[in-house]
Length: 142
Length: 372
Image 1 (cartoon, each protein chain N blue to C red):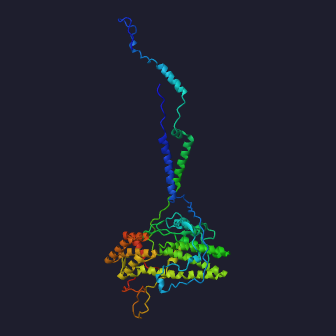
Image 2: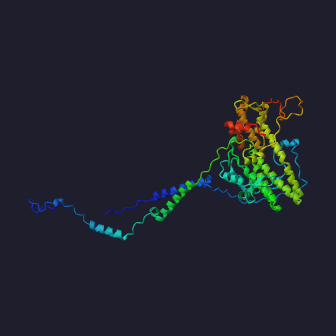
Image 3: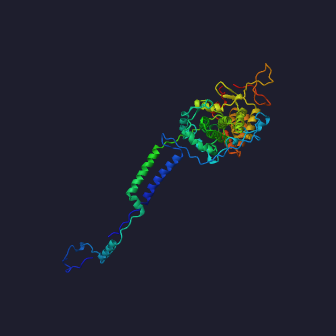
């Protein structure tokens, strides 16, 4: 807003048009009231998340836990998985000393496949002493 | 004046930080549960739940019979003790599966396999009939004792899947040596009551091993454990003048050899070795009479004891690969039928046998001549 010059021919203040606008009326009072109110009001309390975030002991505890867990993962040894144990025969075969012990338990008395039947004559070829079958297979063992 | 700016919430940051810790901890827990451990530190086995073992039944001589394993009717008997083993060593009442303890020693990948190997190296000379045994106060011996007071032991499928020739076996050297060591300790003890405790523990372990009847070798090791224990009971009862108990133990001992012989007879039924010859290239050529295949199929279908039935099913898998075309078709039809069985173990073995061709190694192991 500009003031009207006293003499229109010669402006009294040639810079008058460049003056900054004045503060709105009543602003000062409003600001002072608001400032007074703000000073009287209790300071804004940070929320619980911010408290957690900024707590130094909690930060230290978190960092310690994190490092411990990482160390735990690094130190633990992964168990070796059973890699599909080698084909397990019905009965074990001897290997080392301990395995021999187990093989001895698993070594069963076997029917002699080369035993002659009681009815076989002296010149007849041997046949297996397997349970009687309708048709006796030919000898084909190795 | 501008209004006071509210601070941004750190909720997301805090939650991310917490989630990171929880994830790492959970992963660590999972790895520990899966058997991961510190290097050089042996994993401690699980604790056995409390259990009690009832006193053996009183031996009533008027009802104690000597089973005739050589008589014709014995062919129909299951290959197990006819004499009530509760006369010598009743099982405990523990609620846990004793396999939970023994499975960890499995070879080669059990998390305590190293412990088993180390224990075998700690063995000392025992009585001549037992060979090397663990020292009386060996930690493994003590750790295993409460597990022999449990009422059950099973491995399949609780701990190991039934996968034909790839089926994982428990490390049977562990129970075998435990049983021998308890019996040796019992024989060395001057207190007959403590001796009997050790003998009965060996018998209970044998009974537990035979419960599942899934594999022949496990059953035979169980049978051996019972024999070791029964021999101890017999010796001490005889020395102490307890004739009825000695007689019961002798009856049990008398059943040991027939069971091994009948196991051998069952093995003979599914043994393909008499019908194979080795060709020039090292391959096996099978000439199996159809009548023998009928015996095999019958065994796979109706054999009441799963350890023999399972072997027959696996042998069918061999015939499918090595037999004639009609035999192959018959085997496939049988395996298809058995794969639909309501018995989970039969179905698992038949499915495996049907869907997996035996490897060259499996065939070699199954058909190679037995060393004399």
